[in-house]
Structures are given as structure tokens and as C-alpha cells.
Amino acid sequence: MARPTNKTALLEAAQTSFDKLWQTIDGMEPQVLSTPFDFSDQPNKKEAHWQRDRNLRDVLTHLYEWHQLLINWIERNQAGECAPFLPPPYNWKTYGEMNLVFWQQHQATPLDAAIELLTVSHAKALAHIETFSDQALFTKQYFDWTGSTTLGSYCVSALSSHYEWAIKKLRAHNKACAKRLSTC
Image (cartoon, rainbow, N blue to C red):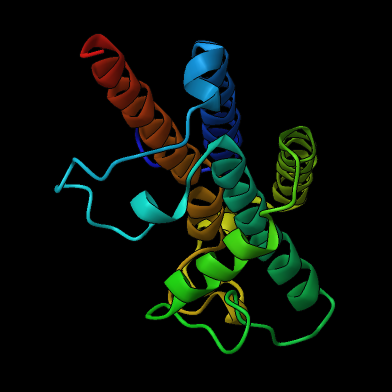
């Protein structure tokens, strides 16, 4: 899928990837969904998230928290507060630590609550996008608070690109489970 360059494409990409995420989840066997993630036998999966997320709830709450980053960032800056995308003390070199904090905060969140949180935050993020013009979303430095990039780029990262990340992770889990079950 091409990276969106206008509001319509941005909204379509977000919704299409969100729907694809749920189709992926709905297509997984209940036994696979309830099996803890284990990528320890896959040395190519080196990024921290392969060890951090242990189940579907962890993936969904991660997506929810990144929606919250986007939503809060937009709301605070539109209200006149000069707020960075990542909350202090985090930056783009240390955001992995922030992701771990998010993970820790949601260990008691039930799966049904994670589903509700994500569904509501997805709709809220799309509603925010609807309020902006193509120019506001895709002109570099249109807002001083977006730095050298575009608001649309942040939206893609927090929505459709993040959904594709989650789909990839869930498919890898599904494949790993199938492989383990076939050797039993």
C-alpha cells in the first residue's frame, strides 16, 4: 500500500489496516490466540517488541497507547501548549523504555477492555484527522509543533503503519504456533 499523501488516502489506509487487523485476529484459532507469544527460537526477531509482547492484549494495548500519544499531542498543541509527541523524559532514542512502561501499565487490563480501548481510540484518532485539511496534514512544517515532518506522517505511523506491525506480529505468532503444534 502506498504511503498516503492526502486526507482521504490517510483515512482509508487507517481504516483498511484496522479492518485487516481484526480480520487477522478473527481468522486465528482460539487456541492460538490464547497461547503466549514465543519467538525465542527465531534469532532474526531481535527488536525488543518480540520479547516484550506476550499476547494479543499486549499488542492491542500498545496500539491504544500510541493512539493516545497522537491524540494527546494534537489536542495539547491545538490548545496552545507546546507539547512534544513523546512525553518527557522519552525521546526517539529511548521510546523503547516508554513502550515497556505502557506494557507494564496494562498487565492487569483484560482483553475485552483492551479491545474496547483500541476501538474507541481508533475512532477518536480518525475524528481528529477529519478536522484537518490536506494542506494541514501533508505540508511539512505547516504546524511548528510537527518539526520538520508532517502531521500526516505522524498519523500514518500511529495508525496504519502500526496496524501493519501488529498484523505482522500476529501472523508470526500464528505461524510459530502452527509449527510447534505440527511437531507434537
